[in-house]
Image (cartoon, rainbow, N blue to C red; front, side, top):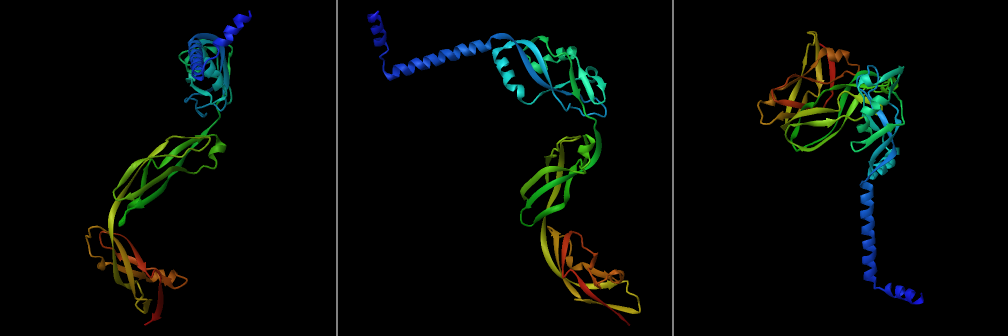
Length: 324
């Protein structure tokens, strides 16, 4: 006996490399054994949390506000059994039921029976699981009452243009309004929806694209995105001096403007197609009468073709009315 024990101890005196190879071999063998066993089929109870979806319940939400546990004895691989137990507390599986499969209990409550669960077994437990029998007999789901209304879509825009380029008009979106659905208290304070930030830089040509509409908790949208477009043009700035004229002054009165001239900075389409010096700015007598401060802002009586915008300096003019 002593000799046998001595031989065993002697055989274990190996160098470090031999022990490393031994443990790696042991680990590889265990891995092969584990993979083999997990690939085999077993019969076990699986539990999956399920939420119901049905788009044809008029006046109700399309997805249930609650989820139910479905328990069934299934035959499937060991891997699927472990995966099912790990995923139990995660997001429920949403299963679509047609309207005929949902029976109404009353009010917001609807239920499905074991027959419908058998038909949806592959959606609940996966294609690789065979259901032997269900422990869950009836599942009760709440589809909340919901209403709807039409609200405008507001684009959130951050645009940067190359030097001497600008937009021609506002950013256009399609659709410019959407229908929102939800429980009344969710919709009460929603009077508009917003797009994601449309951020573009270095613009010198027209733009077009698609932007996602930001989601609102508890609210369903008829559209999830909008198409946007905007024209971009090149401009030049031209400064011109003009005389401020008056109009509609009664014949027995005279109205003086101070200062009598103004500097106007025009933004014009490039290349120029007209002479901006032909622009005319006037102050109307009625505007003077209706002004409490006796100060007025001149308006263009004529703007040449190709002028995009203008800035007049100064912007406000003193008006003095005298008798002739």
